[in-house]
Each structure stands twice: as structure tokens, then as C-alpha cells.
Image 1 (cartoon, rainbow, N blue to C red):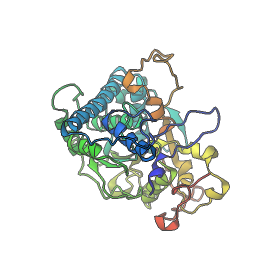
Image 2 (tube, helix red, strand yellow):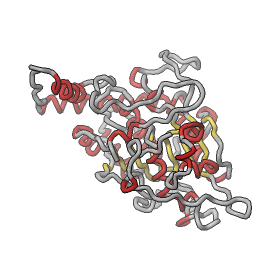
Image 3 (tube, rainbow, N blue to C red):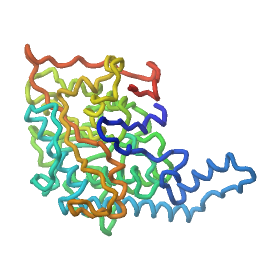
Length: 391
């Protein structure tokens, strides 16, 4: 898929919201990029059209080392701020964890097609930081090294927080060997990470500090649960519902369709037993990303609704969304007293219109017919709007 495909953000009906955008890959400075790598990439672009511009010398090894440490420190600062929100049971991190817990429960109560707002203060699961997640697949976060505290960096920090909570780790991001802690967490709840524009400095940090598994191949969203199923977590019984989380803030709709296609038989299993496939619950996947209801409200034209590869609209009756958003505010202090630290100042942009989505399926009978599996999409079908199903 083309690089631009990862920058899509769906519009919504109603009052116009400022869209969440990834930094411009060719001009990170314009998106608030800073530091050695942001400046270097911006100067490369400017040098092409500037007569007599001086060549920019490549950074020395010492400069690269210092910049790696700065980027690492910035990511850890974002993670600390999110952990503080979780401890205080206020703010986005608390709402997200509550939404994750509620989404896990939604697979058992048969209440599909609903949208609810997570309230972390009322949810006992958050106090234990207990998430029933077995592995995480992260798509399209972007270049976190080119913009300090901007959307990609916040999305990475949030990803690390979710892994930590899924591990029920008591480690906090304060001193000590944080790399060792990340490595232990990766062994327990692995993250599989794909971003087509990853920079060398980002790859080094992801692999050697944050300990994520980087996927080298563009699988177009078709990675399956079966391909990465881990042994049963310690303390979990066979009946426990442990999910695979697809972490996809502001990914293109085509990517969501491919994830759904790859797991159609798990969302709508052949068996009608609650044990579902392989002795697990019917639908072991959760998605954190763009609101599916937002697509249905006005993005997709009637022509594209009939696209045989579009599985997103087919699952809407069985999709349950838990929203984590609150009214946006430009103030450093919100109306509910929540203080926004500098490291989280772009949190609204990073996760605008992102919900936690689970799938709750009623048994198939004479009155309830499950939708047919959509056709598989691949590059041979051609690309419209960079592979998107455009409105």
C-alpha cells in the first residue's frame, strides 16, 4: 500500500472537528517536528529547490546518540504522564482502560451495535489494571522521532501503556533499567508493529529499547490470530476470554476491512457454541481505531456501500463501540479540573474520534442471519484514493 494510505482520517457528521493528522512525512517541521531528524528531513526537502543552499552535513555518532536519548526520554515522559492519569482515574488513559475492559465484557452479553462512554472512575477493573489481551498488532503509528509530543509519539506511548496493563506489570516508568522492563513485558504480551515509513533511529529504539517486534512485510492488515497465538497466559483458565488487540488509530478504512476479512470466521463462527473457535470465545479480536459508526453516518457513498470487499459496514449491527473522547479543550485545565501536562498537549489530535470496538454476535437462526464474508481485497484490484473506499 502507498505511504499516503496510512494518513486517512474519517470525517463525521455534526459540528466540524479539527481532524487528527499524522505529521507530513516530507515536511515534519511544519507538523511541529523538531530535533536532529526532523530538521534534517526538512532541510533535505528545502535544499532541493534552494539555489546556493549549503549542504547539510550528516550528524556525527555523538549527535545521533544524544538524539536517540532525547527521543527515548520524550516517549518515556509521555508514558509517565499517561500512567499518572491512570493512577488518578482521570483523563484519557483512564477512559481508554475502562473502555478496553468494557469491550472485553461486551463479547459475552450479546449487546451489539451500541456506543457507550467509558467511565473509568466507576469501573473496578481499572483499579487492578487488568486487561484480557494476549497480543497486540499495531498499524500505522507514523514517525514518532520527528515531532516532540505529537500524535505518533503519543500513540506509541499509549501502545506501551496498554501492553504494560495487559501484563498487569507493577513497574512504573521511573528510573531503573526501563529497557529490561519493556523486554519482560514483550515476552508476556508481544506487540507486532508495522509502519511503512519507519526511520532507522525509530527502528533502533523500537527493537532495542521498547522491545517491539517489527514486521518487515506489508501484510495489508491480514495478519491472523492463528499466526501469532501465544501459549495460555499463567493464571488463565481455558474459559477466560483473552483477545488480540488491533491498535489502529487513524488508519485507512481499507485496512480495517482487511482485518475484518481475516477474522470473519471468528466474528461469525461456524459453531454456535459460546466456546467458539479453538475453545475460545466467539470473537477474540478488539480494535482501537476510527469509529465504525462514523463511516456509516456519511463517509461512504451508495456505490461504495455495495463494494464486495467492504466488510466494515456488514459488521455494524454486531459492533459495539466504547468511546474514549471528551469535549476538546484548548485550555491547560479542563472544566472537570483535569490538568493537561505539556507532554500530552496533543492528546486530542492523536486520538480524535477513536473508539474501542468489540463484536457481540447473537446465535444465527431463522430470524437472525449472519452476513456473508466479503471478498478478499489485494493490490491486483487496483487502488482508488490510495487503496481507500472513498466517499
